[in-house]
Image 1 (cartoon, rainbow, N blue to C red):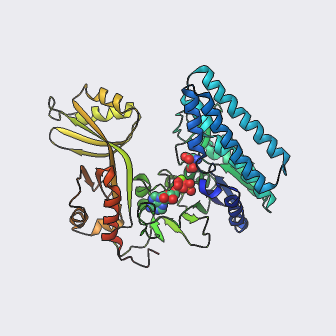
Image 2: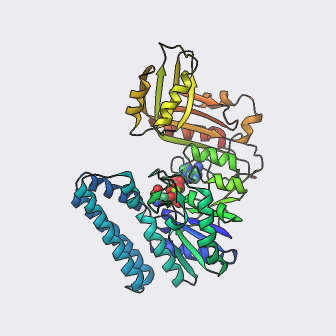
Image 3: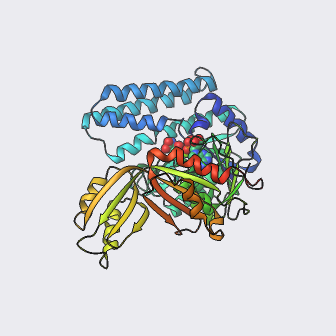
Length: 457
Ligand code: ADP
Ligand code: ASP
Ligand code: MG
């Protein structure tokens, strides 16, 4: 079997869903499980509704909900004709009514919990999977909508719940595998799951890629296809640098570093299940399905270029901890990291000196509380609006003098932190967020103005 995941833009409206159906139809012989995102931007809008309701703005919440309802029904009408499938129509009416009730409930209680946030955030995938399954059925695919909350079991860490693989795999075998065996095409929402007790959760923004990989790993897929709105993984974000080139092949390790450091085309956790089971992952363009995309596998051919790609991750905060009182005493680093761990805040980059430690974290609302806890240990300051730029490639291991080339290309830019060596395949550094476009295009010009045709398109 294979997994085919269609992101938000690939199911954004009737035409996109129609294109997705044509793509899936071509692969029916390979027994696809289809994973879909919410219609593009819907998750953002759901979170905006939840937050409006949480702050007591009932009108705004219900207005946003009405707009989302209209958009979904417009897509359904175009796909299936007016009330062509009364059952779907009625089900969606009930779903949207329940959403409105929930929003009104939040306004009434005057409080928005993470648990309720997740219930609302996952609404987009719950309805998109029903719509896509019905549209596929009308287009010659024997599709069956599957409620992902029945299959993807997670812990209760709402908004970034962690999948429980053993139970999830058992559920997939029990619920999804039999559908495949009977020749049907399961259509599941990405991003969502539920706790053992059945409480709805989500696995983190952009998490539908991860769902695809969880399903692929659980059912031993021969391939995981990520269908999106660009031709594959590119040498850098094409939105940032129009000269970006398609990468034909890339290793799991390189792609994982890029995803972690901001290449939004793949959710950073996507490759974990694929690596474990050695399942190739393809990134493909649903608007240009004939293009061969990017193939991510355990070993990719070496390229003549030093780097395979450049990623940039914005919304970074640097936290500086200066231990004037402790002079980096034994155990000091441990106590610092314990503070971040207690706030469940992952640290990306770390540099140290005799008396100080600097770390970067994704900018988040807990930073003030983290700083307050750290200030019990040492002096603390933090500064946001930073970005990590990360150059990735297996050739870093074997090429001397790379750092000199990188930093001379950006010699006029203020660099706040530098890191190389942790993974042997990445050089990263921290700059001001405002410098990202300049730095990325400068580096791209330096390292990718000529590309090895074996590896880049
Ligand atoms: P989907 O909704 O299909 O999951 P995303 O918006 O999450 O799509 O990811 C696709 C986007 O990722 C592209 O439109 C592109 O702007 C961005 N992106 C960032 N870095 C890269 C990269 N190195 N290669 C390709 N796309 C990238
Ligand atoms: N719809 C979710 C989001 O926007 C998950 C995804 O699209 O991958 O974050
Ligand atoms: Mg995505």
